[in-house]
Length: 89
Image (cartoon, rainbow, N blue to C red; front, side, top):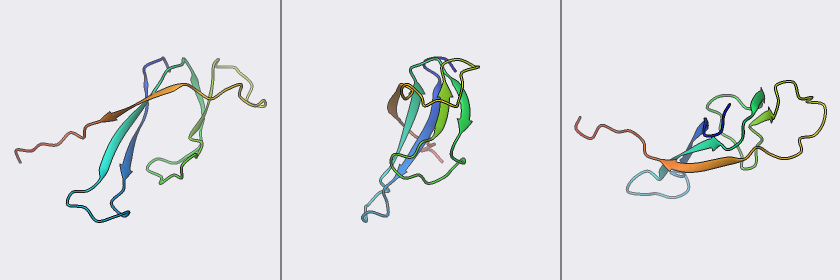
């Protein structure tokens, strides 16, 4: 995966926290800032995750050993994204 690649999209739904006139739902995209290899995915698709949950294991080379602790976490960027909605329907 190259720098700038989309790693994942996140949906944050706070509608159960308090009542609102419109749903407090936001969408965010996490993109990579490092060249990495995805070695192991640690969570299932569409899972509800707790804050701080590890999502995946990456390496900086394709043959890097997974038996040692990583030197650091992967660098990422995050941006809010707009949900595509057709308002004319």
